[in-house]
Image (cartoon, rainbow, N blue to C red):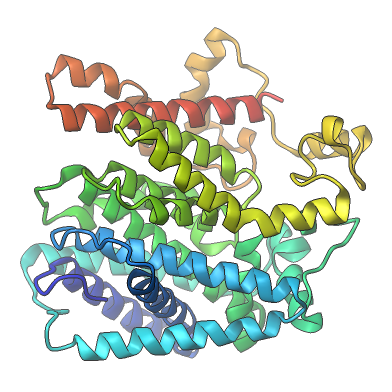
Length: 452
């Protein structure tokens, strides 16, 4: 997926893919053909992103930001394909949503073939080979773990039934006893690409697509922060950081909506952190809409991203345009919820907005099933990082985020202070201020949620 003729990241990714293929062929050869499911959708997303770049005259990123360029194309393409899938499903034509994916796949393949002679996909160096081995091993663990028959409660109750019903009927299901069927659930709809080819395991293979995208977005985020410099060991450092968190592997092996949400948020953060990227307001709006379409709470993360962008000196006028674009693209989900329940953000705000299918009793039952942290006192907050590492089961399933992730959150909350102590330049200071503000906003939101 070219962005520049001398991009060392592509060597790492090529080696990682080779490691994934070899390990799959060695351990579970029957699963090797299923790699075409995530591979084809990633290439289709890239192809659609290229089309958008040309049709809407989106300003290309600098050639010294290859991963950021790649992630922007993947993210905008995935958003567009997701929006088309949503519209087809709302019209009762969900099965036909494969057509734009196939067309975009063809365009992406043609672009890769044409640029094959210009781009060095394999130009080995010691860092790129080592990085590729570590990244590939991480990918293989998640792939082999994830492509097994489903057993997770959430996927059996709604993540898989929603696209299964949509494939069977052509329509988006709206079931009064399934609250999630009225919320935005784009990630579930996109599982249909794998579901159509290989059933439930194919859907899990499709979910792997979003997890791979998180790796790319994480690389792009680091690339944006260290720009204009580069670091040859970014891939290896990412592999080590991600391997320290069991939660991250849960995101890749179980079809959580948070996986697509994480990619959208991380990709938008990379765009915001990149110096001189204010002209990419439409790209930011598309990525924000992807987050809001993946999960109802996505708009909370969009709000945090807007605060971070203001800290990075993005003009408010530009952010308003990004927000307006995100609202317009997300509107079908909210309009559908309003039409079916009378509440566009169902079930949130039911006390003020009213609506069908939700009441105080429903809310009480839901709260009873959700994890809560009852120690939000000053002493409890100081003890919270310890509890997150040593007692993660108190925060719900798949909450083993790991000591490194907890330590990094604590560090990022103090970044604005350290930038003053270390006398960093203005660009780095703004980036650290934005990171601290975003993490602080997100932490407050999470604490409000788990605090009941």
